[in-house]
View 1 (cartoon, rainbow, N blue to C red):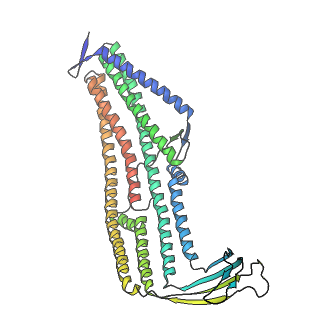
View 2 (view 1 turned 90 degrees about the horizontal axis):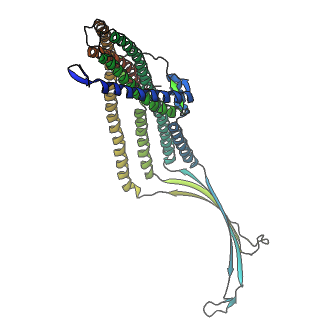
View 3 (view 1 turned 135 degrees about the vertical axis):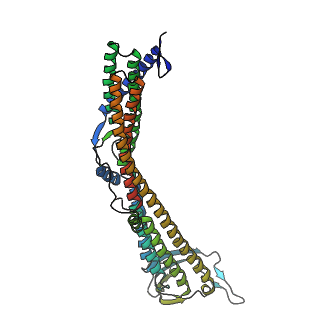
Length: 456
């Protein structure tokens, strides 16, 4: 069997041709299946703002966070309810069967007892706590602060969800842009195949040159198939994230290449320290710790309350008793109590509460350092991504010039088919790298906004 040497290595032309035909069949089959899948799916062009709005509207995480806020508000209302007076009432019926109908005490004459007895007893009371060392006030303020912490959880979740949507959106954009590059390169390689076939018919090149270009086309098609698989996965995940039908095929129009930074690193760090929800939450938790200390100290003070009670006693056995055969006393009381044991046991509770406050303050300092580190890293990553775009734009210009030169040399039979394909591959990879870099730069910018707490 005849073999042809390319790049000093023997290649079996029959095996190469069979491989190309197999790859082309696979490519055509998957492309046809993809076409029918697209035909059944609903396409939708979506902007980043629309995606964020849909994601926030349909987010289950936000609904869960809102339920936590509602729970905190309910707890706050329960604390306020404790300032209201308490009241209770009861009514009981008691029936007794007296088995011994005579009763004697000592040497006294025995006296007869009724065979049975029926008694109706009712009570009603109202209590109002007047003073408890302001513990109720401290509890209300503390619960109100915790409600604000829960609301900040929603704001933080919104930022996280927005960033996840932005991340998924740009991942889809990167795949779609890469597919465009693949499509453009397939058109280029088709022209090269036709050209090599003409050269072969003219006896300028060998059959192996034509096969190498066909193999290159198959490799590009395989790259396209990998990208299409990635597109389906990313598209499906984004559909779920936005609450859209899972068969929706999302399309993205052109987006800005990059976003210039108008501020220096210190300004971004200042923004982060002012806007990050975590810092706002830990500041509120410090205030909660203060109220906890005040509440514990309040146990040293006495409590004072007033109340009223009424009793109804009806031993007549009748539901509606005769006149003057029931009792209905009413009492009014004021109670002052003081747990003196707290005077020597309370100090250790206060000490523990102060330690908890100090831990919260230490955690605030740790969190500030972490945020500064995060902002600096995201800031440097963005600057790096912008510089990467500039370098790749230069490399594309170089790759285009190299591709043009090698194309001219190949047409004049000065360069080999291997050199021609290598030049095309370099241009192809540079084009894809540039599209990915543009999307990565925008994503790096949004990451910087998220780390400063200003991603709205």
